Length: 381
Image 1 (cartoon, rainbow, N blue to C red):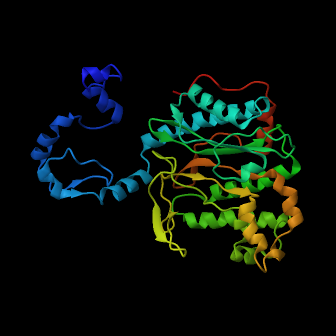
Image 2 (image 1 turned 120 degrees about the horizontal axis):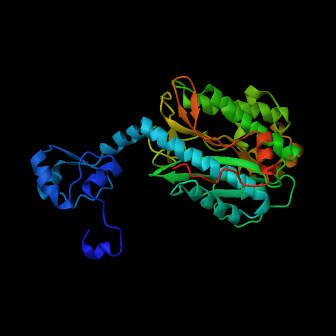
Image 3 (image 1 turned 45 degrees about the vertical axis):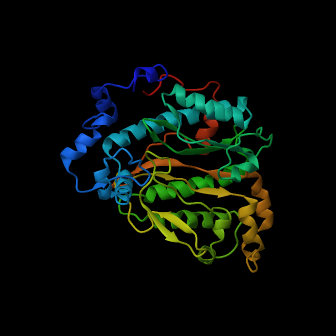
């Protein structure tokens, strides 16, 4: 960086500072690139497919390989080093404290955009540099919309109103992904409690089975089976659980994957198998054909949603009407949607849950009864 540019930007660190900051072996000036490559005499130079290689000497261009590096890097990012897990734990704990603070602020700030602003404030107070992604803050029936980020509605004044907050912070490029749902007025209605505890049972059942060697696809199936059993229990679904699972009717209420890898990206790379679906679109599936390994960091985020667009094809499909009780659907649909999401580390024996936000009904209600926001200070870093 020249002196003129340093008027507008902070001067770069010294080589020793950069080595310490980025954990690299050596630091070189851009102008040294030709000399370094000539000294190394590499037979092949591997770059990402998006890398600008215009600075490379012309005689090195024939040896460029832009296809092999990305899958190797993606695989490396799937299994985390101990220092990465330590950093992710710090980020998850700070983000969890921000969620706790937001829960305790909700009854005083009854608008989605205010809650969204407060979360940004809380993660900074807890030592994080920024949000890892645009947060999702939805309330009432809109909680059944997976990724709306407009935050433009006041919280409905209804006993069933649930606030869904899908948000996480970031530090040193590592982010986390946490979702919590809680009652806008501090108390779950009977219907909201029932739906919430179904999703909590889905998540806790999966968490109790996760460990090294388990197939992720089996966990996806397990979460859906628990959902199917519970929907039969409360009367929304009617029939035999095995037959209903075969028909796939739970997808009327749960239509996304169980989770994903977390790291340098919130939806991190690695472990995805690309394939062409029956509709001729290319898709990817997470860990579909390999067992989980220790030190993978993943989310576990089952949900249950009363989304009209998702339900309509199933409710209108010929021969499927006997599977559903419309009166029961109408009874519970005011809840909107519930998702509970934790970020966890896979271990040989189970999981190390990095997320520390309370999630039982009783714990949430106790938190929301408190008069003041807890644990704002000191920051974790």
